[in-house]
Image (cartoon, rainbow over all chains, first blue to last red):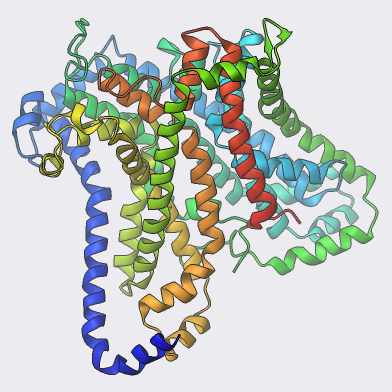
Amino acid sequence: MSANSSTDRRRPQQSRASAWAGRIIAGLVIVFFVLFFVVPIIWLLIAPTKDGRELLLSQPFAVGGWEQFAENWDSLVSYQGGLIWTWLGNSAFYSLAALVLTLVISVPAGYAMALTEFRGRRALLSLTLVVMLIPSTALVLPIFLELSAVKLIGSPLSVILPFSFFPFGVYLTYIYFSTTISRDLLNAARIDGAGEFRVFAQVAMPLATPVVALVGFFSFVANWNNYFLPYVMVPGRKAPVQVGLAEMLSNVPQFNPTNVASTMISLPTLALATIVSVAPVLFIFLFSQRFLVSGMTAGGTKE
Amino acid sequence: MSNNTELAAAPVGVRQPAGARRRTRKPDSAQARIGAIFSSGYALFLLVFGIIPAVYAVYLAFTKNNAFAGVDNFIKIFSDFRFLPAVGHVAIYVGVWVFSLIILVVLLAVIVHAVRVRWLSTSVRFLFYIPGALAGASSVMLWLFVLDPSVSPVSFLLHALGNDSFVDTVRVDQLPFVLAIIAFWTGAGGWIVIMYGALNNISTDVMEAARIDGAGPVATAWYIQIPLLRKWISYMSIMSLAAGTQLFVEPRVLSQASKGVVPADYSLNQLAFLYAFKQSDFNGSAAISLVLLVVALGLSAFFVFRGGLFERE
């Protein structure tokens, strides 16, 4: 501490120079990391406007031509008879079906844990927290072994059902209901003669839109981007686009020179496929920064 | 507060009286019934996709051909020549990643928080956060390009570091760092935004008092902001530690793209995958999965019951 107070006494002389030095260093750090995060994305957006040769030879950030983009697009959508659309359709089907099921399961459960009393409520809540923090990959192989014992592998259910188990969503609705809806409000409805189900459907649900959107966002993004689970459950034509994208890689000659597959994929087409595979999530992300923060900080004890 | 939300900022006081009243009143039987019904669907899923798989993995890990096998499966996997290298790979990767994540996320959050120009701070956070949309296979796919000196936008950097081909870049001794960079690129932005929100929650009085006492930005960060971020930093570390041990998609795609320079058994989950799918040895696979599951479960339970970040009442 003594060293500290002595520097403090010298501050007036030094402060201006050191403040500027500090600002410059901070500025450089920011610029470096902005470039680090942004450059790969900009490059990815430019790559599909070039052909394979241009990609290797031209400046990394030189934009190619519109015709070339159209050609890459054609080669992507004609890959194995439009397989990319099948994959995208699968992704949409799995993610949306799981989204609906997740909401149907999580919202009533969160409500029940927040605003009603029943046996096992606290145990269920603690278990939810523990399971919620386990990375989803940790249970993939055990779930695979379980589902293969009941012969469900390869069926869409083998993806949709595990996707719909979303403890994080239950926790979010629990926090939402317990912080935004007072029991007095529910009791008032009860005194007016509403049954328990009506209290939920007509009092609690209309107030729950924000949390439904929040859980929907997290569920959709997590499921769309999930790779490991669908990779083991639904191979081939039933795969979602994330798994398909990795499959496509094996038809890129640059990365597999030994492969003499009939359908070749050029690097710019692979870049385009990468953009297409994340387009829905990227679109949602553009508008959802608030969502992410509110979800991740939900219930966090205020300091 | 701009980024913090209704949820996070929800007044704790609202909850307290409700909880207090609950304890004094007997639970209503109609409420108990609807509570049980409403949570039963979720409880069923928790059972089928949380508890039963874990129990089944325990069963498989301790049996062989449906007969009790003691710890044979574990002895087998521990003595597999691929097991220890995989543990080593994962350990180095997780170490490098979590360490750099803590340092850089805190540093960047504090710097961005100190930016007074509002639009600048908002846009910087947005740019940090956007790569999070590319997770899993898409993110690795993008990095295949960035790591390949022949097409990379930063090929000068790769050459300067002595990498003249893609296979060079992903050579095994360098791979933990490469994987850490990919993971950082994808995930750090979200954490920076969250830490920024937490920094916003520090009362202006405290910050003002520090300034009047003569603390510069560095001293304020070190003695005030970082200590107050402690819970969030440990939350981030635990989550990252647990997720890092599960490494699968990144080395799998890199292995495919590098013609095996990145081995197909690089990580533990890959090894468990090979056991199940190449060797049809579900017992061995379950044993590895169980080891990973116990690690993840231990970390998460420790945090839930000791970390105090989540509401358990």
